[in-house]
Amino acid sequence: MKENDIKNAGKALAITTTLTLFIAAFEMVNALRFYKPGMNLLDIASYVQANKWIFAFTFIFGNLVLLPSALFLYKANGISLKKETFERETLGGDILLGVILATIASLISLLWLPIYKGRTELAFVEDGKMGAGVTILYVISLVFVSGICKEIFYRGFAKRFCGPIFGEMTALLLFNLLFALLDWYNFGYSFVLGLICIFGYQKRKHMIVPMIIHGGTNLISIVYIIVMGGY
Image 1 (cartoon, helix red, strand yellow):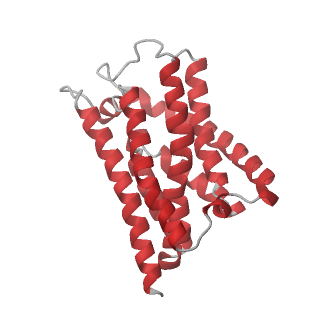
Image 2: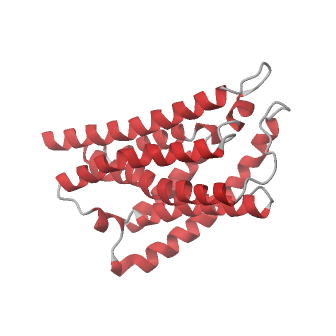
């Protein structure tokens, strides 16, 4: 085991853990600002996105601030992030699988709907349509920034830099736990989404697959909310 491999794994884990703790802690603190006696955890979690502007900007800020360190880690080790993400010869198949798995992941998310029936009257309730500005910001933050950057941190880092130390699947599952912790307010759905991303990544060997799964699932969610009249 090379000393450089250990250092790279440590850097990758540190960067991803920093992102996880920063966003998860901010979400928790932001939600707890609205705490009232009698609230359960579902009620508290409902306030994570009570201010959608702050929620979206936090995602953008956290991911983009740490992205240069990720790019440097790949470059310093002579790894082409472009080739890790996609190759022209397999792009069509990668996109197709990504779209299929994003659709499956979105259908699976419906299984979480009964969980939210446990909210009380103290939970956050949307107060009408939020407008085009929030919709655009959500697409930028959750479909593009989150869908691309988080896959570099949680799937790319795990496989490329921590895989040689912990074993590839062990590293992917470890980082998936961090992925789920960051999105603690959806009560385990992100862990399942992460497993689907891992499957697609392992199947096609390119990060564009989990990027499409992740960003596509978020896009479908946004479209669903628009159709239901939430924006």
